[in-house]
Image (cartoon, rainbow, N blue to C red):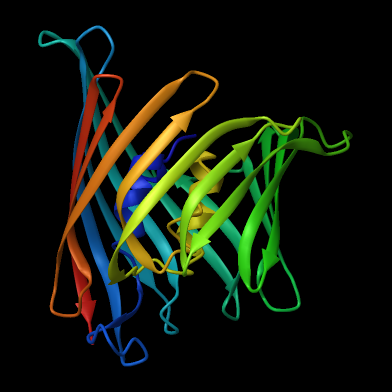
Length: 299
């Protein structure tokens, strides 16, 4: 099952266009106005190897409970892949994430595709004594039989997550074994470096990010992070635990010797909340671009 809105590029869009308290005074972050995104639309174009293109159009809507917590994310998604201008394939998708709470803490995720509930994914979140996520587990089933278990174990220092360990098993009878980790380096309250390590400690991937000076509306919002892993298995954390918005991202794949550079520009409303984004990426001569517009309500 796929939920294309939560791929690694789509997450950059939602990472700066989600709900939180947003400051209307840069020098006084405690003077906050409640803001929430009602809808988000984005378009993307990416070059493919061989000269083809991939075009994506997505419309996302959000529903909240009385406490202001997100309870539903719905997406209408259309993808067109063209190997040549006359050889195109369309792939529409309609999906939904429903988030279940116990108080303010998430204790369940339900997945839907084309209006039908999925029973092939189970999500369990465990919290520590400070109500921080300590373990996030996703179990994949096939006809009721466990075929994959992914567990993410969070390690904190001074209230900041500095490492996440990945553990994995392929059946309910197997013991979980290490499957690598990610380590985070901060500058102030922003994650500026992410290092992905293999089981033996070898660095396989590194991301370096710079930020603007505006408040990230996705700061410490867990609902989209939880939904992202459940649907797409794409682990993205820097945008959640960084208080500002990314403006440049350099990714280096040490295994493939591949370097990817991206720049992000925004337009802001009067509360300094991003309402539009332009994302441009260059990867070994192939280009990708994303544009997004949000409908945001600030009180």
